[in-house]
Amino acid sequence: METKLFTASDDDIALAGEIIKNGGLVAFPTETVYGLGASAFNPDAARKIYAAKGRPSDNPLIVHICDKAQLSEIAESITPDAQSVIDAFMPGPITIILKKNLLIPDAVTAGLKTVAVRYPSNETACRLIRAAGVPIAAPSANLSGKPSPTDVSHVIEDMTGRIDAIIDGGRCDVGVESTIVDFTDEPPVILRPGGVTYDDLKKVVPTIKIDKNILRSIGADEVPKSPGMKYKHYAPNAEVTVIEGEKENVQRKIKELLSDNEGKIAGVLAMYGADYDNAVILSAGESNKEYAKNLFSALREFDRLGVEKVYAEFCEKDGYGLAVKNRLYKAAAQRVIHV
Ligand code: AMP
Ligand code: MG
Image (cartoon, rainbow, N blue to C red):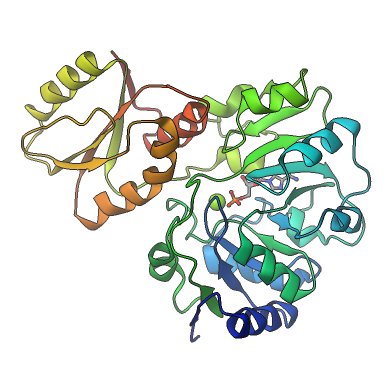
C-alpha cells in the first residue's frame, strides 16, 4: 500500500479526514505521542489498526474527541469525579475510562464494557477529528513492542506501506503516552502515569489511587485492569539497565559496568551530564519532564546506532518521574540497580 505523507495544511487535513471517514488509517501527531487513527464507529477500520501494528487483539484503543459534547456519544454516563477531571484537564494528556455506550464497537474496546476517551490539546489532532466528523480510535502509531513514536520519522520508519497516510506534526511535546484514569472503579485509579501527574489529579480527586502494577511486571496468569499493562512495551533491541540514585553513586556504578562490558557496544542515557569513555552518550535532559520528552527517541536512536547495552541514569525528581520510571522499568524488563 502507498502511504501518503501529509502536512498540517487545510487541504491535507481535509484529505486525511476523508480517509478516516472512508474506513482508512491515518497516523497523526498529538501532544503525547503519534496516534494511529481510524473511525471509532467503524469496526472494520478498527481491526485494520491491530493488523497494521501487529497489536494483540485484546488490547483496546483510545477514542479521541475534539469537543466535550462528544463524550455522550461514547460513554453511558460520567461520574462526578470524572467530570471534575474533564473540567480541569481536558483537553490535555489524559485518558479517562468510563462505561461505554452501544455506539462504540467491541473491536475498539477489545470486547470490554468500558471505553477509554481522550481529548488531545494538539491542534492538528483536533483539526483532523473535526475533518473526519467522527471520534477517532487510536493507539500509539508504532509497531507493537517498539517504543511509541514521538517524531514523524519514527512513524515513517514503522508504518510506511502499512497505512494510508501520515500527518507530519514534527516532534511531540510530552513524549510519553497519556495518563490513564479508571473511573469505573471507586475510588478512581491511575492505570498509567503520564503528563497529568498524580499530584495534579489529587488536587481534583483527593481519593484517587495509583494501581499497584504500575512499576512491576505482570505474571502470565494475571488479569490487569488495563490490558496494555501486561505487554512488554517500549523495548529497544539493546539490553537496557536502569541505574537509579544520586549523581555520584550512579556515575560510579556506570563507570564500573562500562569497564567490564564484554566488548559490547555500550550507551548511556545521561541525566547528570557525565563524560563516560567508550560509550555512546545521549542526553535525557536534566528534569524528569525533559526525560519524558527525550526517552523514546533516545531508545530508538540507540538501536539505530547499533548499541547493544544501554545504561540509563535515573532519579525521580518531579511529577513526571513516575511516568518516566514506568516506561524505563518496562524498557529494562525490570533490570534496575538502586545505588
Ligand atoms: P496506546 O495508546 O498505544 O498506549 O494504547 C492504549 C492504552 O489504553 C493501552 O494500554 C490499553 O490497555 C489502554 N486502554 C484502552 N481502553 C481501555 C479500557 N477500556 N480499560 C483499561 N485500559 C484501556
Ligand atoms: Mg502503545
